[in-house]
Length: 502
Image 1 (cartoon, rainbow, N blue to C red):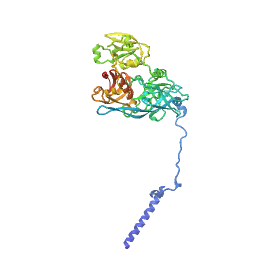
Image 2 (image 1 turned 45 degrees about the vertical axis):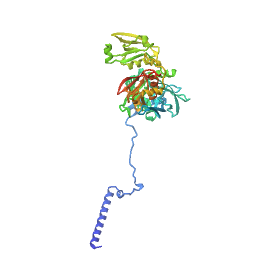
Image 3 (image 1 turned 90 degrees about the horizontal axis):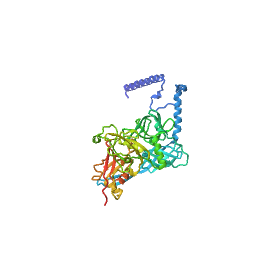
Image 4 (image 1 turned 180 degrees about the vertical axis):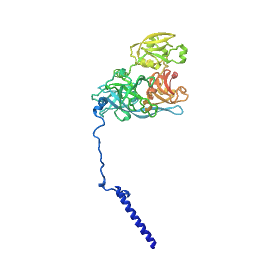
């Protein structure tokens, strides 16, 4: 190595040592360690210094500063503790069927398992549970889980699909804790309410809100619901809406959501008033089925064509198209083209409202009916009868002879439908959705894919099985009327009966 290179190396070494010494001195003066700057180097375990801290011992406000809120908080907790043991979670299992059609109009049936969740409330010490009809519709197995965690099978005692109420009986030998059904006629807009249920399968959940409105309607068949802003989510269906006394004033049934595919709570939920629930419950427990009033009249909403035809310029009413032979309507003197303006003192705004009022009337009750007839105002009295299967047959229809095989009837009509999805059900829809109509069938051109069929001959349906049963039984002997929702409009579609079989 040459002398010049050695001198340069020695100078560089001295410079590096001097720089390191000055750097280390300044780091130590700053309270840090040289080891902090060496990668992979670790502190010794004894070098951690505990932090000094002081936690507050007192809240910012004293108890006497929020005395009213403390009392309210305690009362909310007591109310919840008293109500929650009567609320149950419901799990269902079943097998659904779906009718499919190929390009040649031939049908086949596909079966697939289904599961569902919902809520319910115990209303008798014997273990009767009230829930929504759509929670258990078409399900073969029903299981109920109590607040204590015990699980029991349950049987279906009866159902009211029009009101969307079902009554179950828990198969258990213990004394159950029921809740009282309150008087929903005393409910006021603005009063505090609590909704209890099993949202998303999470278990018992309590939410608080107020009654936002009364007499809301989700459909032509389901009217006079309570609206509340207490949070109601998927799985809450069938759970109770209670007042500050812990009484049931409603049964939660649906929410409003603009997103039908992924509905979520938006501050608008609906509940069936407890008086309607109690009436349906009593009828089901005593007779096994709901009992509805029957007038025996075919109605139509007023439109421009009808108003012109009968020269009627009134604001309200529903027009009579005909009365069934031997019906209470015929006995009362109702005639075609009469306009019903009031029923039992209540102004009539639509056909659906009148049908709802008639169905809620007690069999044997005599009600006043105010009508308009050729420019004159008259009052008639009708004695309401009990509705039965024969009551819904249109006047003048006669059997066509030998009943055809159900599969043959459905094949000729050529309609395939599907059950509603859970988001559609939660959104307040009821019925079955048309998926396909066979070409050259009796329904071709009358029914369209996407139609929501809500009733067959004024009998509400809740799933595809009910639709096929009603359709096959009706079309084999008579013209069949379907109540359809198409593009947001309610229409009626008349399907021809099958020709007489020779």
